[in-house]
Image (cartoon, rainbow, N blue to C red; front, side, top):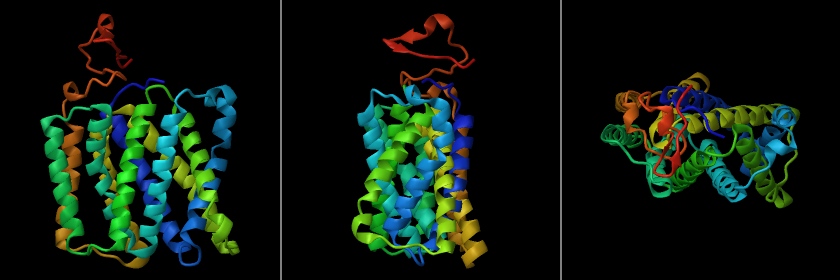
Length: 313
C-alpha cells in the first residue's frame, strides 16, 4: 500500500508514538518491581495482540495475506529483541536515563537505511544527525558509565533501528494493520518460550498494570508504523528524540528525577536537530520508489527510471 508522503505528518505520528512509549515505560518500571522481564515482555505482546482484534475483524483474513513474510519476520525478531533490551534497561536504571539511551536508535536509523534501502542523506540531514548525536552524548556522558545495562541498551537500539527501517521497506506494499499484526503475532510467539521456565503468577494489581501495557504499546506501534510509512526513515527517525522530554517529565513526576544544565543543553541540541530535519526541503527526499511528493511533478512523470511514484492528492 502506498501512503502520501509528508515529513510533517510522519513526524507527528512518531512524536505521538514516543509519548505512548514513555508512558508505557513508566508502567513497566512500576510492575518490574515484582515481575521478571520475561513475564512483562510476553504480556505486553499478548495483550497488544488482543487489542488488535477490532482492527483485524475489520480488515478480515484477506487483509492479512502477505507475500513478504520474510520481511515481517526480520521486523518481528529485531523488534522483540529490542523490546527485551529496552524493558531490561527500564527495570535497572532511571526512566529518564533509559529514554536517553534509547535515543541512540535515531542515530543508527540513517546508517541502516543507507545500507539497506540506499536512502540518500542530504547535507542538512547529515548536519542534523551530527547535532543530534552531540546532544545525546551531552545528556548521557555526565550520568552513565559504560556497564552491562548500557551495553544491553545499545544492543536494543541497534535492533530497534533495524526494525524501524524494515517498516519502511514493508510500507511499500503492506498496510499499517498488517505490519503491526505480524509483529504482534511473531513477538507473542517468541516471548512465550521463556515462560516454560520463568512463569510467575501476577497479583491483581500487577494484572491491572500488565493490561495497560499491551494497548499502549499497540497504539504506539500503529503510530510509529504510520509515521515511517509517511516519510523516509532517515528524515523522521530523528523525531524519536522527543521521548527524552516525555521520559524526563514522567521521571520527575513519579521518581523525582532531575536534569542538570549539561543534560538540558543536550536536549536543546536534539530539539534543534529535529527542527532542521523538519524544515529540510522536499526536493531532498530520496527517490525510493515508494512516493514522490514534489508538487512540480506531473502525472506524466509517475514512472522514472523504472520506478513508480505517486504524488500527493
